[in-house]
Length: 111
Ligand code: 5GP
Ligand code: ZN
Image 1: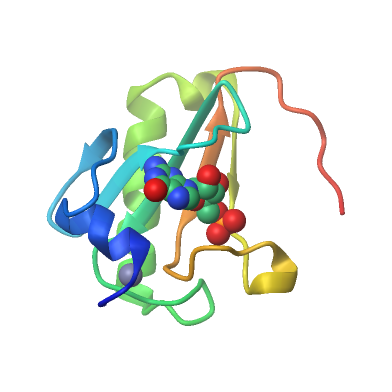
Image 2: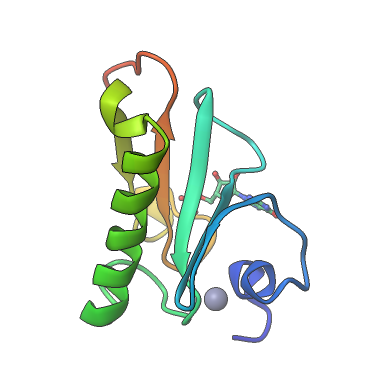
């Protein structure tokens, strides 16, 4: 989608440090990490948030997260997946994305 930051990252118009890519999904490092390891996983196909993404894309993104976390010790060491919905839910980029946080003992979270 025009004027979408993560569509531009997906197409390569804006550079990112990619850690995963297949035909449908990319994973890349968050520019402002909130854990020792902090990645963002997105479907290349644009949607606004997890309530609006089509089910096929949702499965594709989660399959990618599963593959990545299993191959890179995140599963073994523990990780967290977060997705924010709308402004009051903390969403600032309106292309569905999943934060994958790990690489250290994570603090419990809350509001
Ligand atoms: P949200 O607040 O929408 O759940 O998360 C958006 C995330 O995107 C934030 O963690 C922010 O640091 C990250 N972000 C914003 N702009 C960029 C960018 O240009 N490149 C990368 N790699 N991450 C970004
Ligand atoms: Zn987009």
